[in-house]
Length: 416
Image (cartoon, rainbow, N blue to C red; front, side, top):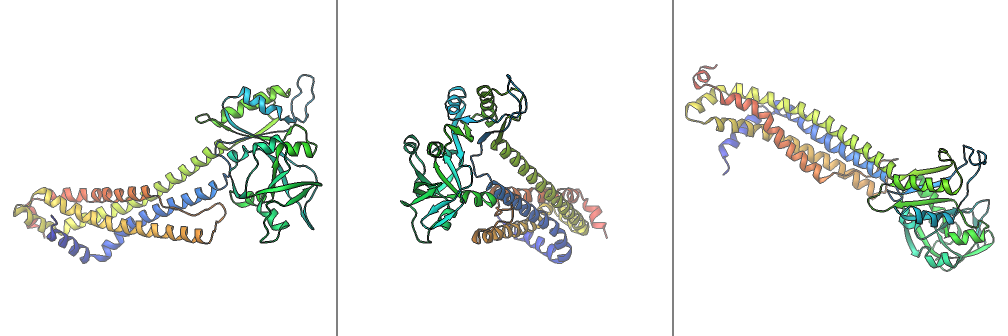
């Protein structure tokens, strides 16, 4: 049952000291506001950076470099050429590998032609497994399939820049032929890259053709430029990175101590490092905000001590008339919770509204400020902040309430 008299007393007390109460409550408001805004900004930074992870988050890439250590009569500085035979060897000797996608790139200066138009693009030899490592949005048609590899078909999947440079705006490229170094390829699909920044620009200029076709047509027999791999579920990417590099060293007569012969990139490790950074940012946001909130809570507690002092005679009368200690304590705690609750909830609404507005504008206009993406407010964070408000409000009023409950009626009635 709602105690109207008690709420009326709280209202009159707050109304009587509006400026004092408002300035004190502002500390709580600002703490919650900053918490929501900082966490939202941290999530925005995370969203922006995560867009750069346009490949599988457990992917490993391995490529060759020059040897730096002489080995088995072979000199240092030797270039290593990986081959398609390495694919079978990896499958046979590294069972932890789930996906292996060998890839090549057409070398040299050349242009791609369609009728009277021509331009320069990157031509990559790929396999169907590439989509498991580097997700790509197929817009029309299809991607490379196993039959294309087996039959060394001259087909191509082209990116948006290719369409823009070689075809008319409303012209469908599917079923049309383009010339790559004098060889004609049938376009069977178009794609859009997933990611942002420079990666999108680079990937938009790519033409995918079957890897076996590139090897045969452009005199790169059995060659592999690099491997993209992912581990089986539950297997750390670091495991396959080390095992595959060790196997390749043995197959290509590279010294086990030669750390420069094979280069690699472990996306999983980079992803974990970035996640650790975001955890640190979130922790810092909580630390700063809670410090501000505590300062506000101390202010509320001091206000309640003043209130108790001002109402000492009133409390003494209440106790003389039979008021229980709990009724006195609940009155003071309730007033503290009201002040912190209203101030904090207002801060929560203001912070959430600001973050939501920024998110709406960035999504509507498809804007990203460098590595900063659209911010977000986590529902769990909002609930945690609400619970924090209730708890801190009770704590703010506990000491003053306890002091009020200990007031002696005789001493209180004599208080001037």
